[in-house]
Amino acid sequence: MNLTESLKSMLAKTAKNLKNSARRIFMAETVKELGKGGQRLAEKELGWSRITIRKGIKELTSGVNCIDAFNLRGRKATQEKYPNLSSDIKSLIDPQSQTDPKFRSKRLYTRLSAKEVRYQLIIQKGYQDPDLPSKETIRQQMNQLGYFLKKVSKTKPLKKIPETDKIFKEVHRINHWADNTKQVLRISMDAKATVNIGLFSRGGKSRIKVAAVDHDFKPTAKVTPVGIFLPEFDEIFLYPVTSKVTSDCLVDCLILFWERVKERFPHITTVVINLDNGPENNSHRTQFMNRIVEFAHKYGLIVRLAYYPPYHSKYNPVERVWGILENHWNGTLLDSIDTVVRFAQSMTWNGKLPVVQLVDKIYQTGVGLTKKAMNKIEIQIQRFPSLGKWFVDIFPPEFWRIHPLLN
Image (cartoon, rainbow, N blue to C red; front, side, top):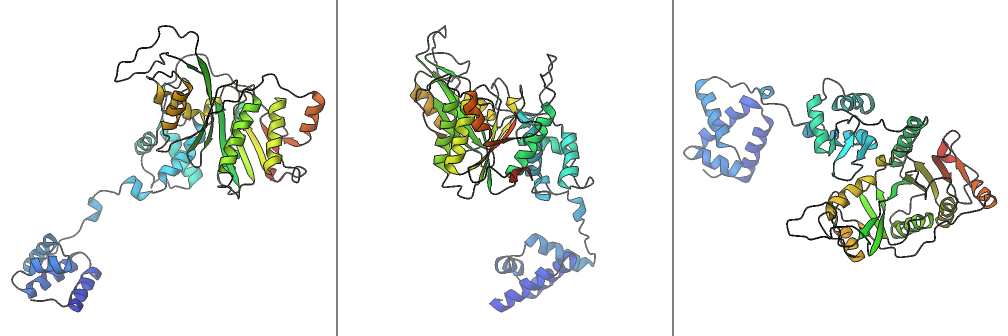
């Protein structure tokens, strides 16, 4: 029997509108009318499953309808039922995560337990308790995202200052505000420990035989990677510096970064910079503040400096990059500056290659401003009332008299 296009369309549409047993019986009756070879014809022309057709024939001949127990087929996968769950978990955990302080592992560690994350999903993200997956499922999701609990060792307690908790709270607030405001770009900036150049063992392993000198004396050169990380875009900009990393060096790296990306971000009016409170970039380092003010004035940007508390620099997002970099080039002899640059270029972060630019300028140490010159800088910036050492706003000339960011 030949099926016309209109007949095929009518049969297919009718079967689609029917459900469960009624649909199967209709398919069985249709195949019966088609005669010999009807099942094969229906499968070929209408796309019907022969298994479903046979089930319908049994129902038609026996007069007993099968009940579809869809509720017994198992629940949907968590990712299918909650497509935003992973991103919501990440938004909760990320501000509370740290990298391995010794860079021996790529893992991220978080202070939050799976139980606490589940509770925060209900409180902050609006999930309903009965509908959320179990604590074990949340734990597996956290592991898949790369967040692991770290065993607490019985050592000296972490040093804290009285303002530590307040600083953390304000950093998280500013970061959340920056990540959710279109005109604001948040970057994380820091310098890694200096790398000695030479035939030195770095404690890594290689599948080929590598021979290093038995003492790490007299390096031929030294390189200090300065990193700028964009958390929103998962992008890394690395600047291997052959000189001493000074305040001028850090701001020069910031300028190199902004010159490269400013055409991508014409809508950005404010840059939030996450920093640790290091000696070369703290908010009372006169030359650093002088250069940051120059940067804000030159590019017409509002710059907000948001420092992490003392002894907590590992929470700065760029610190996670150093663990990846160490694991990438360990087991290799970094015998030249070019080797360092090439290995940095081949590192990947979430599948993305970093932008690497060598900085071989020689920087002079000990550069600073007089107290009188610094007073002129202070009137161009605004410090937070109670945490002025940790949070500073810098305005271009046309904006410095007002302070919209405190709204």
